[in-house]
Amino acid sequence: MFAPRALPWALMALNLATFTAASDLRSELTIPGVTSFFPGNPGYANASRAFNLRFTLEPVACRLADIVKIGKAHKLRVSARSGGHSYIANGLGGENGTLVIDMARFTNITVNPESQTAVVGSGSRLGDIALALNDYGLAMPHGTCPYVGIGGHSSYGGFGYTSRMWGLTLDNVLSINLVLANGTITTASKDKNPDLFWAMRGAGPSFAITTSIEFSVYTAPTSVIVFSYNWQLNVEQAATALGTFQKFVVEPDLPPEFGAEIILTRGAIAGNVSLGLGGAWHGDPNLLNSTVAPFLAAMPPLHGESFTPGNWIESVSVLAGSTLNTSSAPDYTDTFYAKSLMTPQASPMSLAARTSFMNSVAYEGFTTNTSWFFQIELYGGSNSKINAVQADETAFVHRSSLFTIQFYASSFNNAPPYPDFGFTYLDDVVDGITSNSPKDWDYGTYTNYLDSRLVDYEKRYWGSHVPRLVALKKKLDPTGVFDFPVGIND
Ligand SMILES: Cc1cc2nc3c(=O)[nH]c(=O)nc-3n(C[C@H](O)[C@H](O)[C@H](O)COP(=O)(O)OP(=O)(O)OC[C@H]3O[C@@H](n4cnc5c(N)ncnc54)[C@H](O)[C@@H]3O)c2cc1C
Ligand SMILES: *[C@@H]1O[C@H](CO)[C@@H](O)[C@H](O)[C@H]1NC(C)=O
Ligand SMILES: *[C@@H]1O[C@H](CO)[C@@H](O)[C@H](O)[C@H]1NC(C)=O
Ligand SMILES: *[C@@H]1O[C@H](CO)[C@@H](O)[C@H](O)[C@H]1NC(C)=O
Ligand SMILES: *[C@@H]1O[C@H](CO)[C@@H](O)[C@H](O)[C@H]1NC(C)=O
Ligand SMILES: *[C@@H]1O[C@H](CO)[C@@H](O)[C@H](O)[C@H]1NC(C)=O
Ligand SMILES: *[C@@H]1O[C@H](CO)[C@@H](O)[C@H](O)[C@H]1NC(C)=O
Ligand SMILES: *[C@@H]1O[C@H](CO)[C@@H](O)[C@H](O)[C@H]1NC(C)=O
Ligand SMILES: *[C@@H]1O[C@H](CO)[C@@H](O)[C@H](O)[C@H]1NC(C)=O
Image (cartoon, rainbow, N blue to C red; front, top):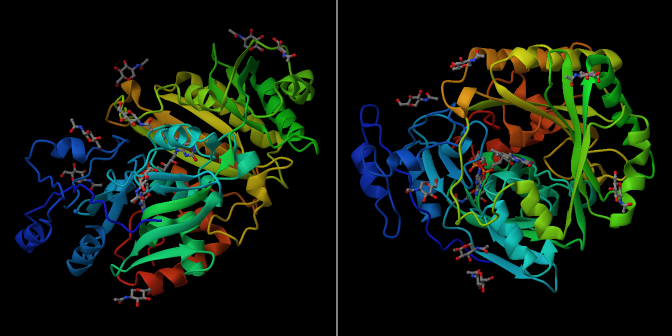
């Protein structure tokens, strides 16, 4: 474990028109070792660019605990940015005038192979973490994009194809070094500050800024097959196919080494759905075919299939579709809107819900001038580690979902502006599912896919945990230093 000692670079922007005490703040934030950017400086535009170009933000200005104290004294909201991949630019505070602390220099990774643990600086990116662990033959569960930061990812979830076998990223957190809203530097673990430890795993950004996180890690699998099976279906077939998948994944013998999702993309002609089963198999390579066979047998003939066998780190790289070393190539940006919907395992999507879903995909999805994809990610099913965790063990409440469905649509050319019909399309698809589902259907939404337009968001993200989170927030951050859109703000 290490105390916060690295200095973050600062993202400094003062809105002089609205900020009377701006010059005070500017001088207070002039701290040796901190790089600052002000509007008009070269580098400011780059430093304040969000991954999602649907949001343009001008954050206010950036040693970490001191910065939090200065921010608090100036009644500013303070936000950490790790990988900057928040869907709604919350790394930049999600609204103008936030004091942003960039964690890009908190990237030390220390691996302890004997205890199978690793201490990871909060600004580390997933690709670099995977490479560092792989040097010791070790691995941990996380998402596929190498540029995503561990700071946000492990605060809110962290799903990848190993999650059925190893859980979400946040399920593997052992302890966290952090800075509280009053500038206190402390640690949260099962034994120290247990309430805070609970809140950090599911709602972290509303409570503290983490500097390093200790994880339990795993022996990397010796063989992984990245697979995809593809079909071109009509609406009725696609609705049936999703029903077939819902049945297949709850067969009692489905191994945890099977990680998968159904991927929906634009059909070849209006009325068609391109449906794929994609994922990674982490078990004995000879057993993938027999594992998938019952599903394939109940499906129409395949249109195509592909298998990429390899070792662990090769599979991480194949899924990333790019280099894992994030200092060797620049990241990209997008202009997009995304929604999510978690479906309960005990009450899978009805035929009516699936048919409405596939109708929107096959018709509106064919004509819409957005590029979109929907991923029906398998969180549950038999033998899933995600759902083996008790619902009250972490602030992440959703421990009985079958799927997390991600609905993602980008603007033409991935550039601003984002068109209104992009919102409409995703609303139509999701409304079609929920309006054909039981009124009391206990569906959630995924905190790592933050949705700035979600009404009722506290209930959807944190369900029955909202009262406990709100009470803790009042205690730990009564003045709202760590408030931002779609967080615990009361
Ligand atoms: C291209 C892409 C692919 C993705 N793939 C997956 C996937 O496969 N699986 C999956 O589960 N998710 C995936 N995501 C979602 C991703 O996990 C979230 O967007 C995540 O929260 C991003 O974390 P970040 O640190 O990069 O973002 P940031 O924008 O830096 O931060 C996100 C939030 O966390 C807070 N935060 C950041 N660092 C800290 C810190 N040190 N202490 C306290 N709070 C902090 C920020 O203030 C902000 O509120 C993907 C996102 C993108 C854009
Ligand atoms: C732009 O900002 C990113 C971090 O957001 C940084 O990694 C990169 O080096 C910057 N590029 C330039 C040209 O300054
Ligand atoms: C933040 O300020 C910029 C520049 O003035 C503006 O373009 C943008 O719309 C503002 N963003 C929000 C969310 O208010
Ligand atoms: C940083 O990481 C390296 C390599 O794991 C390790 O030797 C060093 O002690 C770490 N430094 C701190 C401050 O943790
Ligand atoms: C990534 O590449 C850089 C420069 O090429 C190198 O210094 C660094 O050690 C690499 N990181 C990892 C995690 O392999
Ligand atoms: C559309 O789907 C139907 C049903 O599978 C199929 O018969 C037809 O060939 C598909 N059309 C195209 C162009 O793929
Ligand atoms: C699995 O099935 C594919 C065809 O679907 C075949 O190419 C491959 O050889 C099979 N693998 C094994 C180990 O039998
Ligand atoms: C899609 O939108 C872009 C940008 O507005 C426009 O240039 C293009 O012509 C549109 N395409 C169609 C098929 O409408
Ligand atoms: C900061 O907040 C924590 C948690 O509420 C509290 O235990 C601590 O005493 C506070 N420290 C100061 C200096 O106020």
